[in-house]
Amino acid sequence: MFEALGQRFTSLFSGLRGKVSQAQLVEFSSDIKNALLDSDVALLVADKFSKQVLEEFNNQAESINKSTNPSQKIFEIVNAQLTQILGGSERRLKFAKVAPTVILLIGLQGAGKTSLAGKLANYLKLQGNTPLLVAADLQRPNAVNQLQVVGESTKTPVFAPEPGNGVGNPISVAKAGVEFAKEKLHNFVIIDTAGRTGIDQELMNQVTSIRDAVKPDEIFFVVDAMTGQDAAVTAKAFADGVGFDAVVLTKLDGDARGGAALSIVEITGKPIIFASTGEKISDFDLFYPDRMASRILGMGDVASLAEQAKRAMPEETSKKLEDKFVKGEEFTFEDFLSQLEAMKNMGSMSKLMGLLPGAAGMKKQIENFDESELVRTRAIIQSMTPMERNDPKVLNGSRRSRIALGSGRAVSEINSLVERFSQAQKMMKQMRGGNMPAGLPNIGSMPKPQQSNNIPKKKSRSGNPAKRALEEGI
Ligand code: GDP
Image (cartoon, rainbow, N blue to C red; front, side, top):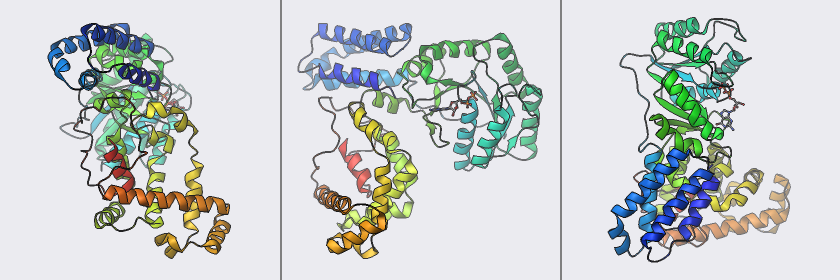
């Protein structure tokens, strides 16, 4: 996500050293404009952004000059402006005064509306809501069926009285869906509508009629981030033709260059509410402008990573690890296994690594990460007895051979895991002693950004050693 733009920013910042002259600041802001244009950001937006950045440089010229670390100050200014262009603060979902809250999803065909309906339903359910999905895309072949499958996988009821594939009236279905939700006491209704491959009047008319029939509390425009600047153009057409309350960006996991995210708020005046980052139902979260800015600037998204870790690890496991850490007890293979299990729940390792500071510079390593390594490691630990897991020092040659046999791996792999594990144990000890171990991701010559409110403070309390390492690494 936004790797190219991230790399451009990283190299721009590494070019700033020591005192920075006015001429350098002017050049820097014009370099930013070019970097944005290359990332498919609309000209109007890139222009405005670079002017605003320069204006802020001028406003804060004195403090930049006086600062012992001018590049740090400049970084902070760009970070704040970038957060602003992405919408400032996050937009939360609005609830209707009287349930159900009706959400209408609109957008072009293939934008990801149907998949998003399922992700949104799942997200709402996890928060204790009782959503109903309404199949009002009666145009796209198989859309009704797809929604039913999505509903089944998230255990969300689907209101689908018509077969679709061109049959049925979407306005009546949407209306009846809301009535059905009222009757069955669903507190959210998510209406999936038909798109077209391009903007056309018939589509706009149909969506407008559905809007007028159901009077939604929220209209979300769903757009494929990979379409770059086109996304902003489509958004504008929908904003003028139908109107919407917020944008959902999908396919942010692809090679989106950043254009859509960075142009859309400015062009439509509407915030981005959710981001979809993959095809899995859980690849979905609220959109946080400050976290996105941080990612674009190569600082990773440690706040999201910590949240995901918290969600993935059962409370008692994380409490147990925390207690161990505080008491100075040894980190064992048993603990390691519970972390691996939690990582399994967190999704792909490459995605998690993408959230680390400096991820833009680790593109190759992230792409080449072998996910099956985790499966192999799990298998090895699972072949150990509880005693071996808790006291790896007992792992002599014959025990290692037995584990190799049990896990179907070579003895050399067992040796290597035990070796790496004892190094990790040493690292934990160093951290407990207050020393930062070497080898954690560093951000090269990037200036250290100011800590955002969303990012955990450096003085971490987490007992999850992996999480703690991350938290202390920023
Ligand atoms: P609709 O026509 O707007 O309802 O679009 P769909 O929900 O059918 O999505 C179109 C395609 O995009 C499907 O193959 C989805 O699996 C895929 N898709 C949707 N969201 C994402 C995403 O965030 N990332 C990726 N990689 N694919 C997505």
